[in-house]
Image 1 (cartoon, rainbow, N blue to C red):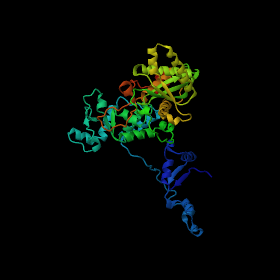
Image 2: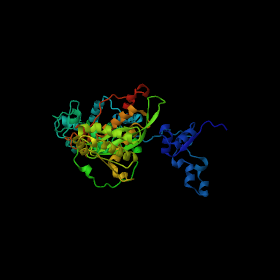
Image 3: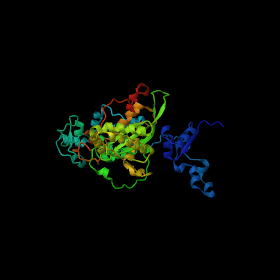
Image 4: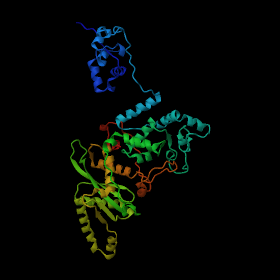
Length: 479
């Protein structure tokens, strides 16, 4: 028998819409149906005209004998039926659709770059979202929306709504004094906040909101920042849910008023593999990172160790002392766990300290008064050192999301370490305020350099191929 054409009928409009959808939007089973019926036609038939519906519903033999639908088929079997099957589509205007497409295109590259036309995009957004507020401000009338009127907003020369306040005469930049107002739960707001989240090495909710408010003021910003961090795929994979320990009373060293790093906690993490030379088949070496955390200011300092011997740790401590205490005083107490290299370093430092006992009395008396006390935690009790354990956790948080499985040279690894240290010392120490007059929040950087730590502006290298970049440009591209 020569079959010229095969037509398949179904009374499910949803199934027909799936079958007639593009292949990339389908699940495996639907795509398998498409491949098996590639040369067939699919048509719609109503449930009352569908003979197979009799089998699924069931029928008595006596009734089946008189069912013409079962024996002769549907009456409209040979009639042409409409082959256009509608599918449910989300309606959106052209502007929303462009923002949505731009957002997902940037997410595929995993690097979000705000173009130089961001002010123009923000202006279009203001016209679409804040059109009523803009007209009200142009007529010198009072805005009725409470969440906007409380911010004392005004229009700038580009018709952008900016947050007012009492900081006009300060030396801050215009964007910091009067950030641009952004709507809540909008695609462009999400793109901007995700850009700051990735640019600053996947920071947390508090720091993300602090950085965004340097240029923009998103409505309901705290909840929006929390959602951006929670929906970040890299942050989700790198932060499993763990049991939370009940916090003990703060020790005296944490609540005493001291200069930075007077009481310091130290911890080591690693190993990390770095290349000896920047070659394709270079020699790989293991290195470790020493994390120094200040008890009073929560400031963090990072140093590199080549191995876990006492000599390497003593050299690291000397570098740490030389960097900080020549300008800010001497550390009085160091806390650490009971690792063997820490115990060995302490004994070596005591031997080194004994050498000064034979110096002149006045110098020896000064050195004795400035001696450093090294305190160890009880064995197998890492929970006693929660302060520096959190510092190690925060360091790994940024390192995993920035470097991943890449193998860096020593110089590149030190560069990434310094950039992570800048980010860690820029975290706000207290909850952020919703008051636009409070332009700055207290960070560890204020105690170290009198202001938040920040890095210099660098050109964007996201769209440049890796084989055209130098070694330092590759490290810059990671950020």
